[in-house]
Length: 443
Image (tube, rainbow, N blue to C red; front, side, top):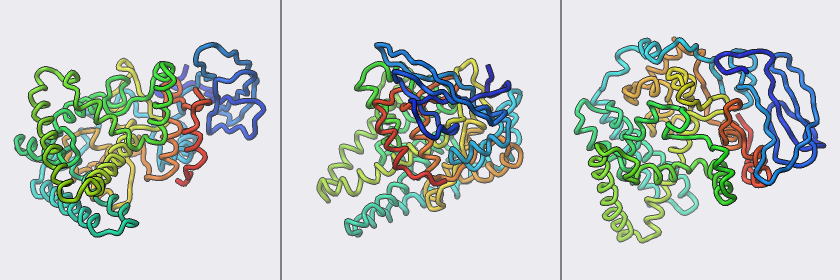
């Protein structure tokens, strides 16, 4: 069996679907737990040829999927990588990093100055976020109802910059003074009602275990046993990993950061202080907003920008580490350098978004070393491109990229990396089919 690091030929992609069918495509698999006959399409990546085969499928009492083992994407073939890039909405899909390259090898090629903390630049980022957020609140107060979405988009994107400042504090890349970082990080997270210390503890684990099955605390693919557990849970997961995935960070925020049982005893004192700060902000800040502008004002000035923030929180996170060719691996198979360099995506956004969010999208160097301050990420990225450019995944934010993630990257499969919901449970995957039909496919 071929793997991403050791490929054998010929490799084949297989897709299944109901017979009869039209226009079988090697680019998109489409199959389901269906009775009767299925057409299997085999597409050889080596020969470029395909053929069809009928397979009988017996229905059983439990949930069943007509999914055949498929080899991982072919990453050492330049033409196929170009085709995958076009199909997935990428500018470049990088080669597989050799197994003998370590994370230290990559880190050692970075210039020392990208690790240097500059107090002026750090506090300038605070000034940018505070003034841009204040301007967003001003726009909300003055905008007619039909321009409020624009004001919310600005204010929500600006307050996302608060998160990035706290993010730098948590990685000790904001200040040389740890107390200053703790105070600034806590304050920066308060408008987001995000507890700083609980997030910091869990986020450190994300960096240590990026794209490791079970262990990564950012995103995990769905397990098949989860969608087989109950009809209600299955439908909720399909909606959550489909149409509302750009807001799934809200569920992550609730599940990971407020349960004291998820933290070690030595972490609990700091966790409780952060939680107390968040609850104090809610107990004081929310009533003040309501007192001044009513429930509608709370909705306008806090809730809607907060929803925009979570859109960016979810979108940045899933785009950084989710694609059909980027695997989650078990701890035994996991390779730190491959996970951080090959498993992280550099994605460009409109420049105003990158400025307000302090270049958090320049994410590959951040995963090579979290100690790089946000204002040095571009210089570090340029160095990585010069030395390791052929291994980097690059994209510009586009509809096809989002459509690929939302309609394809669902259930974990060791051989194929991901299996989509509409392959496994076609009869309950209307939300996924809706996205496939109506989301634009522009790259």
